Image (spheres, rainbow, N blue to C red):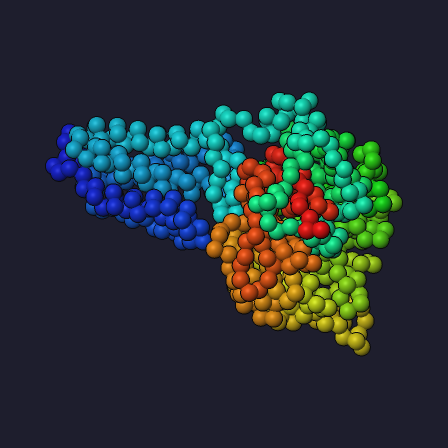
Length: 584
């Protein structure tokens, strides 16, 4: 073994062709398959890993390198990647729950090994080892030069040079300009009689009634009213009396902000000295404020619950909902939007519910200790009984509005829950796995109440009607219209029948998005992940796209808001208002 290590020249050149073939197949699976066939991304990753294993076996068994060299090179690659994790940017070291660097290192270090073998196949042992060492250092060094601004719904990372400024850093550098807005036209009149009180509208179903749009945008294009830089965050908007409310991050301050809807100018902001960050979604709050009776109810990503005056931003009361419930901040942050009902505001922290009194902020009740969740509490009336339903990793749970005690639960375990339940009829709900990993489908359940029982858990039962794998919404909410469900199946807009969950059609175009339903016209207004407004029919006969218009640049996960003829859109670095052409 020692004599092999000290050989000046090998007896035969390295056998490299198996490694070359394998690394070509690996990079096709790693880059080309996800690009041309996004739904096969996971399979491409499995092929990439399998090729890496095969490359390792080639190097160990068939490469003709000295045995000690074969073992030492593989050990050095592993140790180098582990050491590199300590010096890469935080977005790389913590990405994909801490595995991003290792996932990227599989194809990169495979290529480095094969390339070094090709280059050094006829060199002496000492020269070959120098080339191998240089390839390992170069392969790992690449990772130290980059950062990621997050990942898309298909887990495609947005890579930048490590030293490039983020949009948030550019915003902070020009903070004086950030309050002025940038109207594209003169300040315009806004219909202040139409409100949007919180996440996905008044019923949290994404439906807008009483609005009819022109569907030919080639002749009547949306008109930009203003565009405004904004701090990162995945909050949507609440709207009242010509003002819009959202949440964002600016440096170490988590912000609840009020803007003028007609101009985009900042009216007031409230800040808390806290910052949440995770690599996939980036920094900032996730939840959307709720509005009620002159107050703003906002829940931050670390659990700070603020109640503010909607005209001035002054604090009415504040709590830490995470501390109150004893919950832990989940990996993607606290994301549930507050729900105001009567004299209570109900808050979800990673699957645990707490109801605060509006007047004092004192907790009135706590719900059952929940499991992992990013979903928001949903107010439903089932068989005449008002109740609050929350989706968690164990399934769906309903609690009584009066005391938070469990009424019923439906078990359907998952890693977590993101989606809202949708009402299909009295006592019928559509729920989804929606765990951010694609999940395993959508389910309709029937909730029944024993007429002879009391309004307690013993008086309620649930029954599975159907479970379908034709709709895997991932992290995007779906809507129900006239007996059909419209949502995203692994990032492709899809229609399924409410009766049995069977697919009616699937869009030929791939891409995630958030939906607003216009039931009066049977239309879907989608804000795509790419920042486009897309208008499609919400009918079961076939997929029909009517219009498409770019409104934002960069990854866009925030829910759009339609107030009258004005649509509000935002992502993690800008927001804008557009006037849509009305049909009449």
